[in-house]
Length: 296
Image (tube, rainbow, N blue to C red; front, top):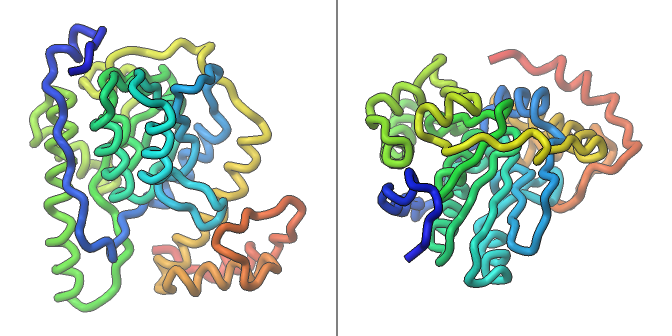
C-alpha cells in the first residue's frame, strides 16, 4: 500500500480503473480549438527538474503521425519498468489527443506500486486531464490549465451509424465523469455539466480553480517551469499540421487522404508515418489549402 504524504489524498480512496474499449476502431480526438489554445498559451513550456524517476509528457497523447512521437501506454509502461519500485513524478504539458490511449495510460499509472505525483506544467487538456487524475498528489501551475470535456470524435454515416457511435461513447463519458467526481469530491452531475459546458467544448480550469474544485492539491512554484524556445518552435510547427489534418477530416476527408494531401503540398509525398517535418520545408501551399476548407 502506498504511503501518501498529503493528508487530503491519504484520506481519499484509491481511484479505480477506467474501461478501455475492446474495439478501438473509433478514435476520440482533441478538438482543433484546444490545440489552438495550447499553441497560444502552453507551447514550449517545460519543467526545470529532471531525474531518473520522472516521466515527461510534453506531447500529444497517442502516437503522433506528424512528429513520430506521442505518449502511449506502451512507452509509459516501459518507463515505469525502468524506474522500478520507487515513487514517480509525471510532468504534463499536453493538449490531449486520443482519449482511449489516455485512459490506458491512466490505468498503467494507477497500478504503480509507489506514490505518483503529477505536475501540470502548463496544460493538461482532454486525454491528458484523465492521465493527471492518476496522481496521488496533483500539483498545477498558477497560470496552468486543466481542461475536461466529453469524448470528441470525427464520425460519418447515416442516422443509424451516428446513433450507434453516440451510444458507444456514452459509457466512457459517464466513466470519466465518475472518475473526475471521485477524485475531486464533486458530484457526478456537476462534473457532467462542466464536461458539457460551452456548447460541448468543456471547461478550462485555472490552477486555483482546479485546486478549489478538488482536481489538484497544490500550486507549483513559478521557478519550476521554463519556456524552451526551440521546443516551442517545434511545437508550433507540428501543431499547424495537426490542426490542418483535423480540418480536412472535419470537411469530409479520411485521415489517410488528408495526410497524403498535406504531404504532397509540403513536397514530401509518401512520407513515412514516423517522419518529422523538417526545418526549411516550403509550406507555402498550405495557405491555399486552408483557404479551400469551408468552416464547420
